[in-house]
Length: 418
Ligand code: AMP
Ligand code: MG
Image (cartoon, rainbow, N blue to C red; front, side, top):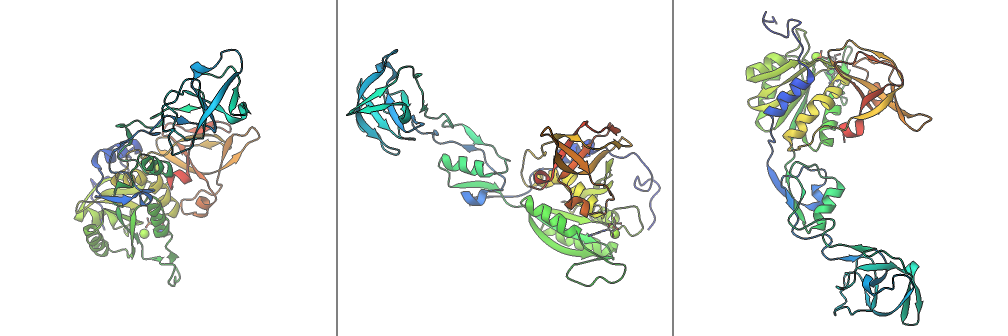
């Protein structure tokens, strides 16, 4: 296959900086999936497709934060013990049922509604009972141990915003305002292919010169963790027509297509011409390491990502470049992982001008802070390096030297692949 002279891929043209590429992606990509209403428990790990507005206060009434005795602060003696009659008992879920009277104290339990006049609760450990009276020590602050109506959520406020990935606490908060169902985005339908004449499914024989397919499993795993509905479309041989037909067919009933391999400079790399015949490629060569050859485009309108073939490069480019796209297409708004700062337990000299990710394991130093230790053999085919690592040290384009003890940016695998 001949490369055109003005094909930037055939030349050593300028590499696209990662931020420029990501910015481009962000502007072109919107949620593509439909919306469905699901029972609350099924909403976990899904992406919210509505703004949830509270239709009631939480808590719905002023209530006691402790088991104890409810009083009106005004009825207490400011500088001596007060002796007052216990005139009622209020348990959670039940009201006093009559107006509170001046000078009366009420036995009250955690979560029980405060009687109207009362504004302060003594903890039961702090008082003494004498017959029908209770002895209340001086000095309690007005409002102690009283929870206000609406102090967690006020009626009418937006408690959860569209685009939020729902964790147990968000699902719980929706329940606390009385929602039993939520509108969420439908799972993104993603097709995954591997490419390469040498690549074999692990359930089959691998004749001499062949390798087993690792990428389909790492990529499908990453997609499943991000909440996608994944279709395993197997391995494509290195043939432009085969690749073209398979992508065209998958584009019909998927929201996103992933391949790995076949995006390098070699004559047997057929992804680029295949995709260009079916749609277009937006960018191709990024200033990143590992994984410089990575393809983003569309096949008959369906977004397409061609990851590099080397297993580490495929995973790292998924995590650091494609992950945001997957989440955005799925309807998520905040897609960036937290960048932690940890101490480098290594020295590093880089070329600069590109974003680089180093596989790292964390250890706790004597002072209790984390330091990042690099995996020694760093080839982009060494998948054991990913297994031995906890995350990635991110080296920015202008960082050419890292010294032991420097603080560096660190991306945690549990977050990149939740
Ligand atoms: P390619 O980009 O197709 O030239 O592949 C680069 C390297 O990654 C080659 O050594 C391939 O054999 C290897 N490779 C490609 N696809 C896979 C895969 N699915 N699983 C494991 N290794 C792969
Ligand atoms: Mg290949």
